[in-house]
Image 1: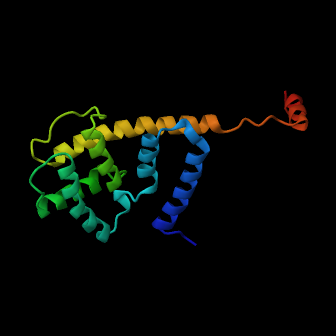
Image 2: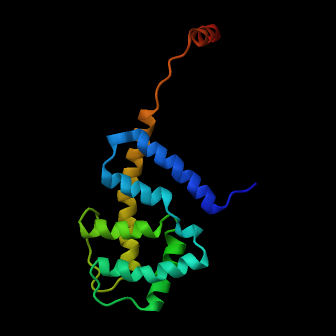
Length: 166
């Protein structure tokens, strides 16, 4: 029986939640939030036509978050959505909102202004900068996860078998 994308995503989300709990306090709350956005939310590559329509409306929120005064027109929202579906398949819309928050707080390397234009160029630069920021956290997460795996001492029988081989 083949699992649907959503069922697979739910299983991965549970496994991820267990690994986060395993790490305890080795990750900050901010790092945990970024990991949750990346690992548990539906990615653009998995969006249905209905999801795409919902996201198109949400780009108005993202543009106002970074300080664009005029709301985006419908055609601009459609263009931005198609841009993300083709160029940022590994992102969820939650990550775009998170990227806007990090941009506003000055935590990203990308510092250029939007000049009242929430364009594909601005969004691409913003998401590429956020991707670098996110990947540093992902590397820390995987490193901490590897370090948390307990080293199991071999039994006496296993030691003898190893010695016998050499």
